[in-house]
Image 1 (cartoon, rainbow, N blue to C red):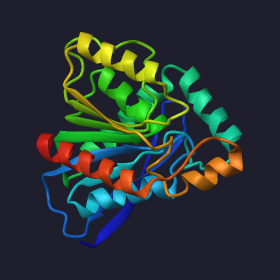
Image 2: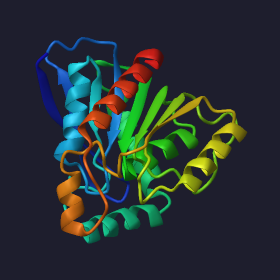
Image 3: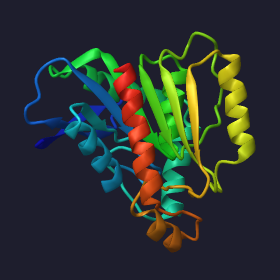
Length: 243
């Protein structure tokens, strides 16, 4: 299936331009289910764009979301951490930026605004889980090696869709205690969720650049092709059930 990429620009109230990329099949008609794709802390990388492109090949309208503005991208962990910390410390920033992304995708004539899901990687996993926790109208949410902690725990009735957690067993950034706390949070809020643990996988296992990024920055990251493909299929199954 041939896929086309379209830049979607939208502005925050304080004038920051977000440059997200929408992927659609060239045969796209109306009524498509939409998927928001939230990036790792590096920014809108080739990995995230490729994920959105693969979703478009499956017949979804997929938006690789710019969360930093001006499509900023780095492979330097210190810079990525600075950008991520800045948006997390401004408690209004991510809710506004993800809402704008949701609205931009939902407004597309090809998209059914009532059938939207979201996936995210690492920092992006936290972003999409927090969207669900806030009560955004997401039918399905997948976190790949994502950060699971919440600023405020999920409340019963807020999370509208089904959640899927694809967790790396050897993730140095997300501990077993974090996973246990997440289970407790979701059980208390009566959320439909499932956690897959890949025992040998490390943080970043879905990103082909993870091993190189880890070596460059002294972080324990690694790509795992077999686990990445299984996690991707698990996500497609979730979308098929819910969208």
